[in-house]
Length: 161
Image (cartoon, rainbow, N blue to C red; front, top):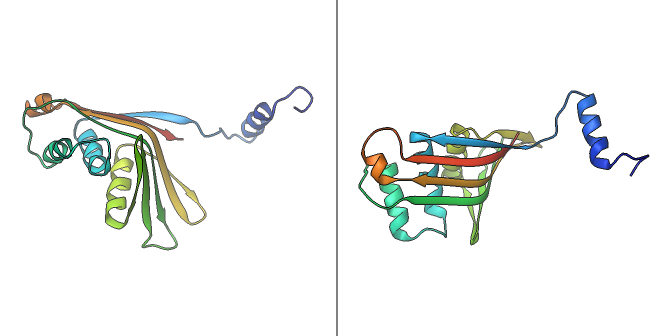
């Protein structure tokens, strides 16, 4: 502590003094086709979903809606990196409650691009664009989606901003 000021307070003062704000988790919510896409690119890699649930989500993402139980896709965090120096390097690390999955190439690009379309923000650092989302939860209700009313798909996550 410096003369009654905590390091946190001092850091906030310095950020504010230069017109900057510290990074904070910003909540993001998406619905409809974007939510189906997010669930559709994350589900195949989730160790939390059964093969049947993965197939049902893949069917929805491929435009085949059938009645069924609600489906939930979750991930603790997803961090994707795309290099602007080594232009062929793409990767994503997905952390689930029960395990981690690392993607490269096309699969990483699909996840990264879909998260960008859903509102995740990438930040530059040492030749890379890095995008991190946390606490991702997507819920798909095939019975509502089948009705073609535009509803039945919701996702939320936090992103550093």
